[in-house]
Length: 200
Image (cartoon, rainbow, N blue to C red; front, side):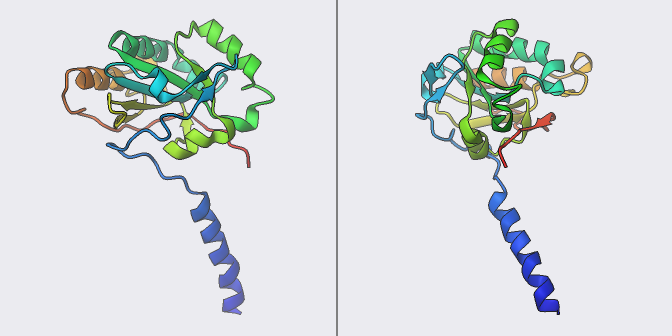
């Protein structure tokens, strides 16, 4: 009797292990830097295309997540700050399960326009890059140096729930330390947000 009970249990464990996505660790290279990702207009960009002299910021985000919306102001400030420090910015929408609805190309176009995006906002087809990064939520940030090695992963500030009450701008501090050639003093923080809507 025990054998018959253990077999389905073991099968469930193996399925769970197969579905698990490993997180990109500090010091890892950006996955597939030459891979072209299309934006809502069909323009293609790779990480290598977008990175600047001091590195690259990759953010997994979307249009409608309440966490993304409440962090819009601090996010825009951080992304613009990155550009001012010669760090390229690319925002990826990996919500493949919402592609016909709230995270469609048309919705992305309107959102980017409303938010005044100055950086590529691209579709992550089949959540391929989110899976390669091990990204779980929106918004979730990955900061790479000029060699596309990961130096910071996590939240924009220390208070994603209430950004107006934040006391430390994690991402801005990491960008400053990167540009100054210093080790990033807080290389990881907890990203909080909506789960990425992958297709089942």
